[in-house]
Image (cartoon, rainbow, N blue to C red; front, side):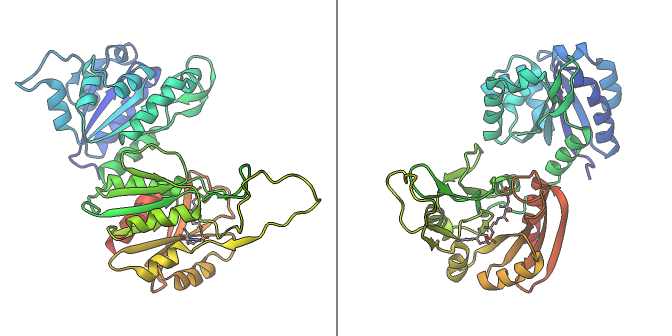
Length: 391
Ligand code: PMT
């Protein structure tokens, strides 16, 4: 899987540095070539000799000892297929976010234009620090993936969130990124995400539990697969592709229609409210009677409309069902007329709405059914995209 892939690992000064030794072995066992850069502080936790033996390569530390005419930070970034920074301290995350290049690792990161994954590890109070969170958002907006730390006993004696995530998670994220195909290069993929918000008055609204995570995972995967991505979402997100923020079903409909003609794929992962109030109240509705009646009217069915007007686009609907998943999904794909329908079981707490994992069933027009076993939403997203782009 990783045969002949070039993995560049940046290790910074945190106690979790020692764990990276096993990770280097795992990458090597999978056939990858590994090179390691350390910050001076990393060497307080792990020795150069250990890393050198495990990676079977020289370990890079200084910027001013080039082996050939090319400066080290340029030749290392040219060499690598992917860069992983683990553990990443608050200090290094901050420097990369601000474009500071004051050691070899941060200089390489600054020059690096391919896939980069960062696995932070730090004290739980540092993790919650506003600047650290802001810096991570900056990295994310640039397309750098970060693997959140986990809760647990920390080396500093605290118990909280800050522990380096599992090596298995890091390994899988690198493996996934390395094996991404360029299947969607040159394609425009429009994705909707999140629950629409149908306002009742200036204070209240009708909405649903959709967090937008599934749609965001699809957008990130499509971007990684080389597509031009437009994410139409009801949630605030920062990403290195075009985001159109909307609120209501009507706003979502307008945004989708604007992108429709030039799109190759439309993926409707948003949970669009079927109904909105007939009349929005300009003023807050006052408490009075024991019961009040809100009159609701149907929202447009965006997906069904797109399917009626489609030319060459591949249209993918999602459906959220709390019972009879497959029966309802079969009826829905026929009714809506989309090319594929991804059925979600929202009766389970561990998948579907707002969870980080999902388990879905994909139906095509001929009612061929394929189940994708439970996995992170990013893995599910990638599989859905691979499925629809190769069928
Ligand atoms: O956002 P997460 O928390 O990550 O959760 C993911 C999810 C469960 C919300 C998502 O994966 C999902 O299932 N989205 C579809 C939810 C939904 O609205 O299902 P539905 O069965 O009501 O609608 C079927 C399809 O028609 C959907 O593609 C929907 O976008 C579309 N639709 C629905 C109503 C409407 N008026 N217009 C539409 O276009």
